[in-house]
Amino acid sequence: MARRNEGEHEPRLTLHPESEHADGHEHKAGPTPRNAGRHKARCTPRDEGKRKATSARHDAGAAEQEAPSSRPDQPARRLSWQRLTVLPAFLVALLLGTWLWFRQADLDPVSADALSGGRVSRALWQHVRLTALSALLVLAVAIPLGVLLTRRAFLRVTPAAMTVAGLGRATPAIGLLALLVIALGSGTRAVLIGIAVYAVLPVLAHTVAGLRANDPTLLEAARGIGMSPLAVLTRVELPLAAPLILAGVRTALVLNVGTATLAAFGGGGGLGVLITTGIADHRMPVLVLGSVLTLALALLIDWLASLAETLLRPRGPDSMQRSPCKGLFA
Image: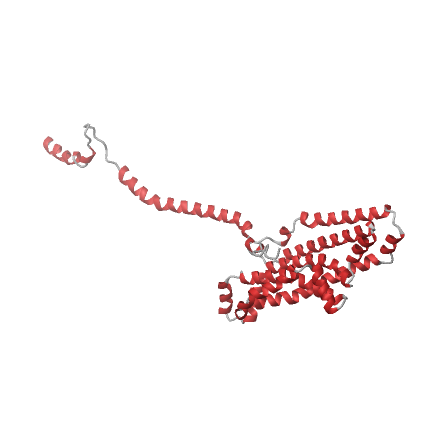
């Protein structure tokens, strides 16, 4: 009986021979090694899922933080309060200081006669009118000409046309005005043509550069969806080139304000009448008033043009805001 019991117990002692170690100690081969492997196999996908979910939440948070910076700036953000107030405040201070100086100045009869009878306001209005009309004439000539020079049929004549347009800037303004007065006679017509010719190049150069800078793939995509050539020009090319065209218009406006002072030599009036009167008669108050008003008008028009350029600029990357033809007509 004892032997049978010993035989019955022998298989139980040899069920797990791998649990015996070299040191002679016997360890129970419990479920720990096998369950550990199963637990590891079950936890690995769950851990991976947790890590992926955490990474996704992190990426989403980073995207939310970067989203506002990647959006185009709104006009309210681009027009800071410094830009809206500093220059107007300076102009108000300049004009106020000039007015206070004239109140305490002792004007002789010649100076008083040159500044009385509404002559100052009439000269200022004539100057503004000359600037506006010449700017409209420049836009009516330079932008259509720039569009034509970027068409395939006129690419060969583009260098020659740009050279001819540059002659207006190469010629001294007073000499160009004198030639036009000789050819057309004195008056507003000759003065307007002279001012416009002198300011054509900036608008023309910026128009050509802006249209050439358009992405060809965008134009091909517009043609691919069935848009006509006129629609591609008006709805794709010109809006994309608008930042450069507006920069050229701004430059032309400031040039027109300065060139319009020479209209006095051609019988066109303007603030140049006050300046030439002050120089000819050696009357400093008249000269100072004409110069200050011309400076204030140029700064005011440049400020208004900068605001219009910012508000009318299509929303896009900052690379569109820089003019590649800067210095071309300097």
